[in-house]
Image (cartoon, rainbow over all chains, first blue to last red):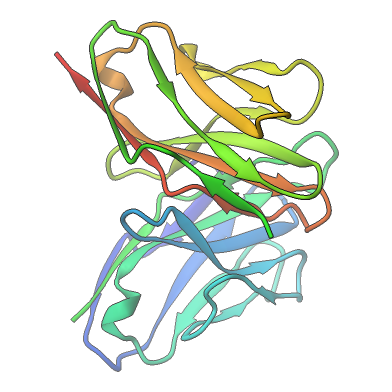
Length: 114
Length: 114
């Protein structure tokens, strides 16, 4: 998980509350991703950003917004949390360099919505 | 559309026994293939990857995987497991033409019996 940090590590929200999950990298990579992980479902892509200032929807974007204001940071916002958003959220990064197609993950944020 | 199938949700195996975790994928275009490991309460870490060349790929911690294009499989193997291998293992596929987004399998929990 070196190079990718996520805050907070844990969060409990009440239904309807909002919050922002933060992700920061020090590896100078272009692409950044937000996933959610639910038991038995692997990882599902919420949003991704190919470069600073650009974002695109992934498989499950509903209920989320993202912001990529600079190369280093990519935030995920829940405007009105719902119990269905209880999950573990992972941020990942990837280099555009040839030969390096793997993604590097942060330690995750465990979110519970009651 | 791509998909990744991990055929076993759990694989129990005795310590020092061999193990194979199965992964099959479907894609109409060429892909890159990855195995990631997730230890309890941690993020994901790359075990190994297949980009091109030799179809037998060696990774960290004594794991290896073989790419079989005709069977669209990328099974993960280890000749002798240890208690420290207890983790969840994820197979992922990246299309070469889709900004390298990863499509994930649902995961296989490796349970080591003493």
